[in-house]
Amino acid sequence: MTRYSGRIRLLVLLVAALLATSLGSSAVQPTATTLGAGLGISVDRTSVGVTIGSQAVVAVTVSQPGSLLGPVHLSVTGAPVGATVAILPNPAINGIPAVVAVQTSATTPVGSYLLKITATSNGQSVSVNVQLNVTLATGFTMVLSPPAATVVDGQSTTYTLTVNRGLLAGPISLSLSGVPQNATATVSPSLSLLGNTATVKVSTATNVVPGTYLITVKGQSLLASETASAYLIVLPQTYDDFPIAGTPDRTLAPGSERAAIDLALTNPFGAPMTVTALGVDVTSTDKPGCATSNYAVTGYSGPFPLTIPAHSTRTLSSLGVPRAQWPAVRMLNLPTNQDACKTAVVQLAYSGAGNGA
Image 1 (tube, rainbow, N blue to C red):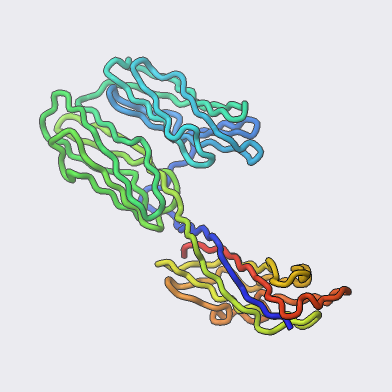
Image 2 (image 1 turned 120 degrees about the vertical axis):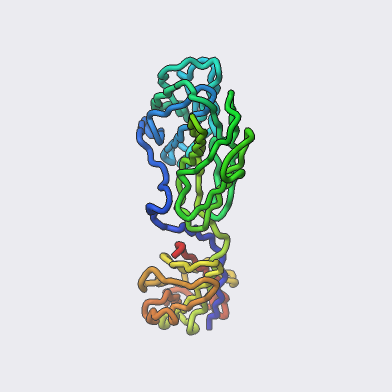
C-alpha cells in the first residue's frame, strides 16, 4: 500500500493584460531599430527637440539572445557644445528601457545635431541615430527630473519640476499628459506655479499595462509656453505564492487504476485570477530504493482558463471539470521487485501559472 502527500511551493507571474484606451496614454513604441549579429538597439523616437537650458530624453532598449547575455554598455557621441549626457541605467538591462538625457546650457549653440547611441556587449557593437534640434527659449525653461522612474504596478513615484524663469515674474499654469490609463497624476502646486519648483506624483493601479510612458508637463504663462518630459517605466507585479493543494483519491499498487487529484487552487490576491497552466510531478519518496521511476503522472487535460475569484479557493470539481480530466498519478507494474515502495510517502510538486483577470 502506498500513501501520498503533496507539498507545493511555486512562483507565479501575474500580468494584468489590459489594453490601453483613449482614457489614458499608451506605452511608447520603438520607431527605429538596428540589429547587429545578435545584439539589437532601438529608440522610441528618431528626432527630439529641446530649448536652450532644457533637457531632452530618449528611451533606448537593447536586446540580445541568451548566447550573448552579459552587460550592455551604452555610449553617446555627437552631443553639442555645452550639453551634458546622462544614461540611466548603464549598463542597460536586457529588455528594459534605458534613458538618454541631454541637458543643454546657455552655451549650447542653436542647431541640429546627430546623436549616435551605441550599445556594446561581448565585443559586439550596434548603433542608432537620433536627431537633436536645439532652439532658443521663448521665455522660461523647465526640467523634469529624474529623467526616468521605474515602478511596479500599484506603486507610486515622484518627479521634481524645476523652472528657470528668466525675467518672468507671473504665474505659470501646469498641465500633464502621457499618463497611462488606470494611473493618476497630480501636480503640486496644482493650478499655477509662482515659485521655481513643483512636484509631480504618478500613482499606478495594479492593472496599468506594463510599458514605457512619456510623461510631459506643459507650462503656460501669459506670453510663453514650455514643456518638460520624463519617462515612467511600469513593470508587472510578481507574487510569491499561488497555493495549490490536492491529494490523490485512492491508494495505489503496482498496475492499479490511476489516482486522480482534485486540485484546490487558491487566489490570495485582491482581484480575480485566471489559471492558464497546471502541472504535477513526482519529486521523491521517503523510502530508500523506491525511485520516482516507479510512478507515472498524467497531466491535467481540462479547459483553460480557470477563473478563481479574489481571496477564495476553488477545486477542479467545483469548477465543473470532470474527474477524467484531473491530473493523476499511478504506480507502474515493473518487472522488478517493488517491495521498497510499500508504505512509501511520495512527494508531489504542483505547479501553475495565472494572469490577472
